[in-house]
Image (cartoon, rainbow, N blue to C red; front, side):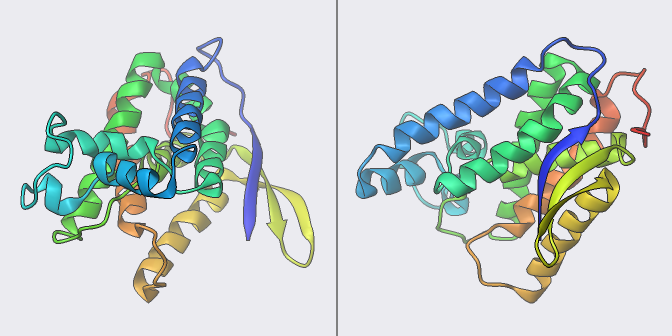
Length: 227
């Protein structure tokens, strides 16, 4: 129903959000490599590096003997199923990530992003204990960035391409745009839409982002800002 285009929220503490841009570049590079594989090899890569609940729980051996079971709680976040999956996640990271990196600093933001990825995966695991399919994608980590954004900058203007009758750009407060997003995740979880999407990972990442922001943000950055 909507697609975020950009926000009106300048950064104040860092000159360049190079961690955000580096993460986007790394995700793009890894997808370019995996997309060049044959379908069989691509599927094997998702099995090797995706987060599979029964593997993390040590109910089934790790396909790569040199990779610890727990490592896939992080590596899964750099794999994507297709270009649309990648571009959607990276668009949200591009729009919201620089402000959260600005609010935390480079190293704390990198720690934050990784922690959100892990906690999102653990949430997925908790509700899919016997799952034997790989979880892939940066959605959980990016949901954490969105959770941080709605806590720190709910009043910032986000320009979205809204599909009402025809697609038109509209400026809306971040609270409404991201609030609608999280409400849609809960809705799809309740109705069990049957799509290959881990709504639990999205919700877990979003909640992790809010909680971690309370600890990792700069003291000078207030909550509920962005006016």
